[in-house]
Image 1 (cartoon, helix red, strand yellow):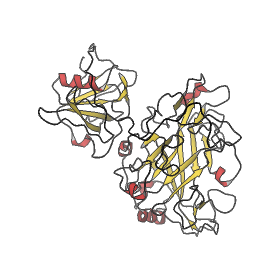
Image 2: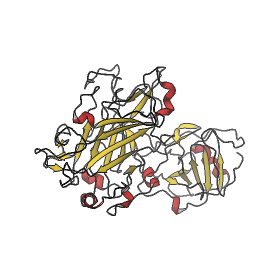
Image 3: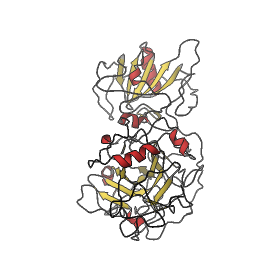
Length: 487
């Protein structure tokens, strides 16, 4: 099952540290019910998922991989392959029917309220256990075998991190104190197949995560033969990679899929028990941040108290850091700015677009100074009532909003690209439009705050020099039914 999008990247872990800021940054995919403290009922109330199956509102998460700059200037998240702007990237989740040595064991769906983790974030060396075998890395394009730690080899096709979860349940506990002891790997010496031990008699469907990181973009950061990568918990070895799973399935549907979807192709589209979201719907299933700290872009230190460790000793559970951890739960950055008072325009939401069938065709331009205010000024000066920054540096105008591309109720959308003229604002994304509307005289001018309320902008728009339109370094696009206009 593809999870083309991610919900959010932040320090939350409702399994290990419910209701608190967690120890390190995770990248979370799945249902929009994800929060610091959540229940099965919360998952089922999700309006969308960043994973492709509509009947699955589970959440899946792993620690974020960062690059450590060799000049000592800090860290930055490593995007997943194919997500060069680091806006959407998710993971792949496999549901595997491993029925035991004689292929006769009945496989079971995860029950309501079930949750578990796999891996050990504090591990910094390999001990050969089944748990350790369940963590692996594939250095694509290197013609090397898989390893259990991050390889010191450049990976032309990217580095794929993998975690295989235990499959055998005690049949009683939906969770346990360490979030693992209610589950077991199979009896014997093989972590991903075999019969369940007597103490764990219920053989569950197997789940396996893959996250393919775009590591080649950081080839210049290698220090000799030492790779520059470190997971969010300070793990430079990879032995501490781990995954969390919180069940949000319609359990009856999952059981039907387990029993009937046996096509050898592995294509989930051939499973008649489930229905599918489009990739765009998965990209759009974003959540606002709820931890007050910066985790994206270039940062001086890893968020939380997470000094980089190289093993072989286990990392300390409570390391000593030079400064206190000041991050708290609370509203983080939002997906829009509030210009209701200074410009009289309101945020409608994040809509979609199509390069071959544009959502807005009234006017268009691109600009290396692009910001939300500049786009609104541009459209307003030409008599339009809708303004939509897109792709970081573009601006589209129109007098109506095509319902096909309009924001969906309760869905935040995939507008995650910073404006090239103001990195603190968001100007849509690839095929995503941050849509603002001119408020009519006498109406209450209100934003759509699905991504959280933004602070009211109190300063007037600064005067600008209007220059001829020119392509920024981010994108050169072909626009249908729109002509670029001079500023």
